[in-house]
Length: 259
Image (tube, rainbow, N blue to C red; front, side):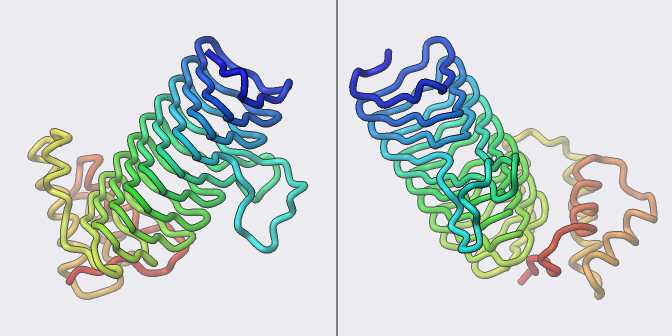
């Protein structure tokens, strides 16, 4: 199941039933989980760990050096890809900038052709990055977020779980959980279709709507309004609490605003 033209470093650890295609390269200190598939001409760089059943398609490069002018290439860092994640053609994923740290991508994600994940990013489970999506360094993406084609996300931004960011959007501020982002830092409301597809119970959706209005339909700073809503104790569901707590963190300082 390993093509004779593949280049595999002696220190690489390959699990059972791993497939490696023609001219693929697997460098030192790599771990390839059981049943993973490395297609022709894919490159798995030093320090990368692939979980069980991960698929890496043609010409993808996983674990490359960060595009950071201050990065010291002698630093030992890596990338970890969760089980059954699919990495399509020409995807690039860069290793972390800190010693012994990892760029993290969760299980069951789909990174479509040409997507880029920069150094120190953290993606949750079942995240989808569509074609040509670009994540800057240190971006955090929550579980089940969908980022459409051509989207550019500024470094240190947070993309909340369950959110949908529409094609070619420019995101330089945080997108709240289950938000519907578009354009340049615009929020069109909640991702109600996504909530329905995930079978989120109606009471939880109703509370999420109340939480959304508590933050965005009232005059004041988003973190202050979110903290006030939480202090009132009127929310019981995890969806509402996750939405409100999201505004109490982050480094970008502002949040995507509704039209």
